[in-house]
Length: 119
Figure 1 (cartoon, rainbow, N blue to C red):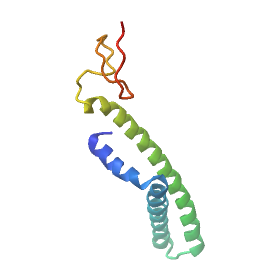
Figure 2 (figure 1 turned 90 degrees about the horizontal axis):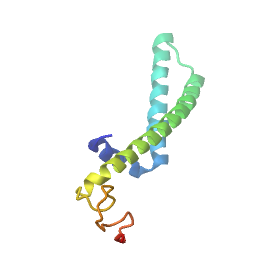
Figure 3 (figure 1 turned 60 degrees about the vertical axis):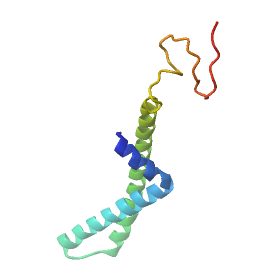
Figure 4 (figure 1 turned 90 degrees about the vertical axis):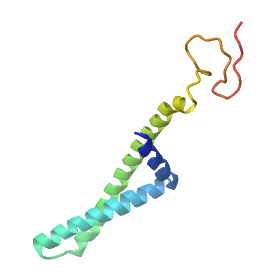
């Protein structure tokens, strides 16, 4: 995930998982696929059966629910990895803090409190 995608996902995730799944999954995937397959039926068979429309809405709504859930989870994993990998570069790279170079500098710890010096 790059910075642009991370920023876009940061805005999208503010709506919450439930709303994301309902909009992107059930509505977007479910209704779009049901309409597409209904149009295919209409053009190929020159007729439309309303019972199949109901079945399509139900089935594709469920498929969309799971697809959006997987998409949310995948994006959250990528976003968390991006945030973790970009965290050191945001601190300015001053070298203080959690340095493993063997320096005896008493910089801030992960909790923000100064580290105790070793004697």
